[in-house]
Length: 323
Ligand SMILES: [Zn+2]
Image (cartoon, rainbow, N blue to C red; front, side, top):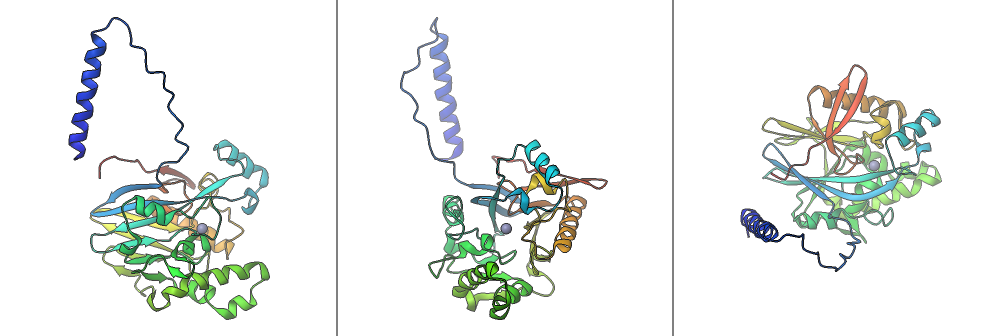
């Protein structure tokens, strides 16, 4: 049934109900049956157009990111977090973004898979609920090689996205997939290298370097935003007059880092470079009025950056029922 048909049916039913009400002198007693609680969340996907492209934001889940992981004054961090009604302890979403250009279906990052606990790992499931079969994904564009971004690619050694090519920056591949670097890493970081190697292994023959020009396809290009990792990369999508920057981990906590972009996260490989990349991405988004898509912005992770002098503000994108 078309949505138009459904609407007129609903309207007719409502009109009939209103007519019946008008004919009685008292409001009829409603049925005494109690509505059972749903006890389940709504599907985690949101869709919008970007010019002729279709963007689907897909939720992986949410993760605790302790305030003490952020640089900056502890009392001020506490205050900002409380003021913005963040859950305590604070949690950030993990998002991935599918972009259908009409020619190819791209997926930017893949969530955590089974690597980071039961509050996460829903990218594949939410893609299916959004009408996207993982086999239809032509290419995965990885922002960087951290487990909350590559974890959903591989399950029990098998590729989840059977037909996808993988794009990742040369710098991140060299760092995280190098047995030599893994060998030299402190013990607590060794599992990150092992996880990256295991996730990439089934795709080894389909691993693509990012083109030197940045352009992957018409309207799809990579933008180096290093700092969080050595090869941390954003992806720009442009169609007709609209542009979107999928900026990966430029922001880990929206309540803190728009207000204080200089506050870095303990997991940033190069703290100063990560803060500089954040300011650069904010300035670019604000100046060009880009739609931004963030892996740890509040779901669906789509919005805009306003700049006034040296101050930044985040505005969530407006959800529209029409595509
Ligand atoms: Zn992340």
